[in-house]
Length: 436
Image 1 (cartoon, one colour):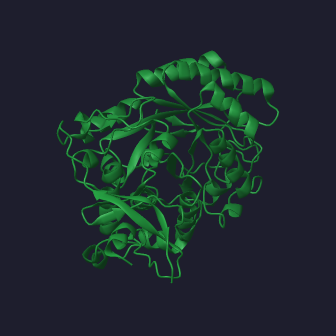
Image 2 (cartoon, rainbow, N blue to C red):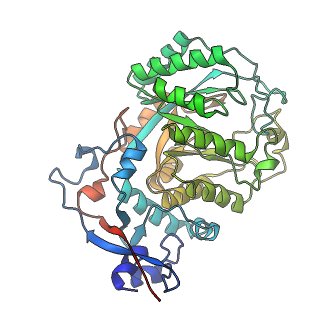
Image 3 (cartoon, rainbow, N blue to C red):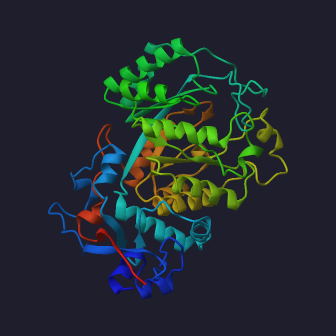
């Protein structure tokens, strides 16, 4: 195998000696493997004329993640600072576990470097989540305060009126949000034709304000996904929550395959997929790795991956079992950061969203998570039924950290490290047949 091919698939010998992580994966391409990449170009992009400051770089990529990723279809890898990364869909659990278990300082360095190779680290998307229909859900999710099977503080409410939702969206926009997400406590849309019609009107109205629109409405069929797309839906959230192995311990009324089918329906309709999970559900480390493995081996990586820390609620099975069980709700800043960092490395072009549980972390701890690769947050004082930092607190945090919000309906800026010539990009033309 030529040294050029080794340069594409792995790292330099010196970098490899200093880093044995699986994502650098100097995988052997012996004669038993039928193809190898053909090098077209390996280059450093020319330095941008407008300086090294990411905020000064006006070049924006397409907002649609598929269009954005298509621009890099011939890209094999990126390298900077002794770290090489690539977009892959063939990760093994063992490779992801090796990354997840890196010494924290090394994991932070690698994740932060990958983040800077692919993104502008000063630009953070701001999303607002509104519960348009609270409580009364028939599912038995053991963490959820909205289930009819659990006795919690949440009282069922009817679906909000279209005008009420549009007024809430305007307030969110005025406060700086650029994506407005609407959640309904349903197992599925099913035959809720009247309610679905109102939701389509909400999507059209919010989109008409210049905001990106996201929904989380439970399971969708292909036709419903198509109609949401036509109404102007930007993204659909449908979390996997945890690994396939641990999932039955958390939920019994909906299968993992049900969730994957909804994700497929959304993806096939041309809607961006938002899909992540929750830490603190009683899972083990291998379950966190297992969740990332499922996400990183989907046919297309999600546009965004929310990482949540469980906010336990009394009256739910997990909330009532929290005392005396260190695996439930006991999520610290290092747990969150390790999960975010690993997600950033294995899905370098995916937005990683710092989601529920943020209120329990200090500004310094949140900065650690942003440095590990988080580049999206939920803002506003509520996330469905749990508390979240106020808008003003987040704006103060952004000013403190030097962050700017990502504009609505505009793609991310070209990574400043790429624009200023710090990233080495390897491209391939195709593959050629190898013969033993």
